[in-house]
Length: 112
Length: 113
Image (tube, rainbow over all chains, first blue to last red):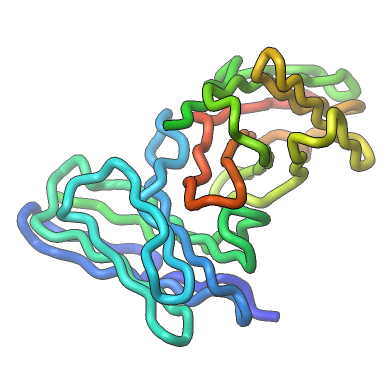
């Protein structure tokens, strides 16, 4: 069974640009969550999608958005990038919301 | 909303010793408590989880205990090995609703050979 796949692995952008990250969950998993990981801050919840519906959203500005497609693949978008958006963005999939998450390898975003 | 505190932030032990990582949570309605391990440069992986209707759960060298009254839960690792060196994250959520899974900030465990 293929694991959670995130693309791209690395991204370098400049301030003001926008970026789209992609996540393909494990086959059969309908829940996809996104987290931002920075040194010392742990895993900050961005949002969760379940069957194409956003179930929950973390405390991030509206520049962070996401969506889920009918095949459960998910994308997150960050517009008007800021230096502070530099982080590892992880997505995780599961069959039941919040339980037994399987994480992808992440996308390392650097904003210059 | 839920807030999860994790301490200590770093812990260094000798191989063969035991290690204990403690977390506290704020929402008494939380009922699901997983632990994830993240080795350097790798993705987080679930190592054990516990529900609020259980006080303790064991899996080989690891165990988790839950004290609902005090709102804290702990991860215990016995007979530590160098491969246990990693960052450990605790988390809490209220299952059955639309609550999010909230993680602690992580604890870096170093097992010295």
